[in-house]
View 1 (cartoon, rainbow, N blue to C red):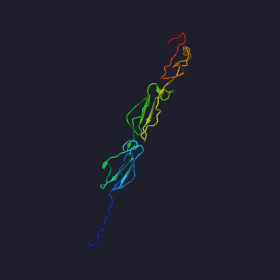
View 2: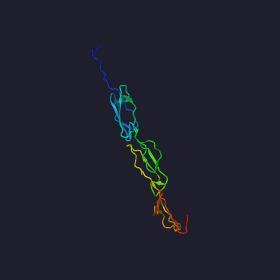
View 3: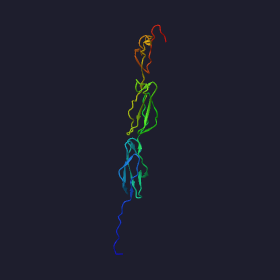
Length: 193
């Protein structure tokens, strides 16, 4: 009308808004516009594959349609932060594990010593121990060994006087024996079993 251009509107990038939450991950931005991306970082003990030492970071891109997507091998993919896998629990001599299945971060493998063995020779009831799957994909230290239960041999005077000397193991006199030792008692003269 008056020979002047009307005011020109400014072109602004499409805003995708706040990035979507990803469980067990934090992100680097509050709002993202096209063509930028937001960086995600998995929490300790998590990777995008669940493998120890695996990738822990990924990006979601803001598209020209105002939505987010993640590229993987030039295709849109869904990426999560998975708990680290420790694999199957380690084995320990003279103990059985409750579940030999693959374990993940924070899960516990429970072990039981076989009959006659314990983690504390003076306490036969102490026959269980655990190992936990950790954030680096390893298992926590466990006693890892079961030892034979020990037993004090009888000291009852009336009973001991029926023996011919102290009991023996492999020809050596003993006052304590363990579950694996064959203890030999010899009867005193005039006594029998």
